[in-house]
Length: 223
Image (cartoon, rainbow, N blue to C red; front, top):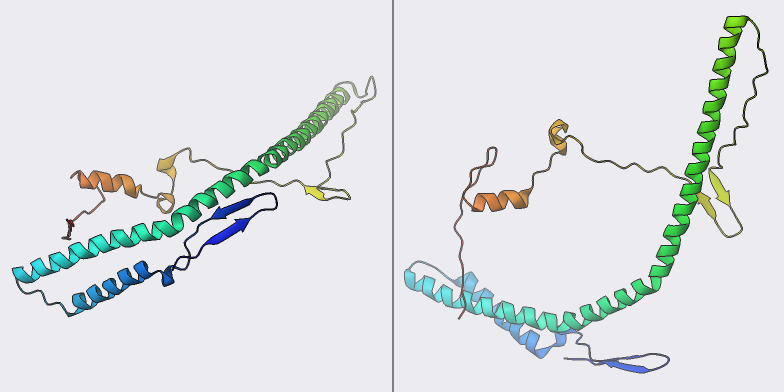
């Protein structure tokens, strides 16, 4: 069964034919019935001779074709939906882009201001530390100070949280990391590249620490 779904917007009418309810689709149900029949044959099949293998080959070839047909039928349902979903996501990403950019710009400027204030405060504290050390050295040398110690004013630490009538903003610290010496990593943190190992094993190369073996399988080619 195929159901037509009509989508209407406020300014224009857009008609979309969408396949829904595959459980009511006669072709899909027919394919399912054929699959059930082949499953029953497989369960009752006895393979004791080359002729039995040939009969199984016929069924395996039919199964391969039916699986492809069912997959194509599935794509007939999901293809238009996926294309529409991609179009919707792309459109809304475009709508969101200015907000994303505004968010990034505002955050970077607030963080830059915070970093600069922290740098200035550290520099003020460093200057005062140097002046205090110089004063102590003069006291040890002369027993008195020739001039008073003029410390610079140190800015207060930035508030941990900013509150307004619209919202709040708080500073947070997040950890980042990179591996600088893989050999020094404990074994529990070393993950093998399985994809790369598989390619090398398939090429017949022996890798220390890797056991490889072959298992028999079937390759069915439907005509």
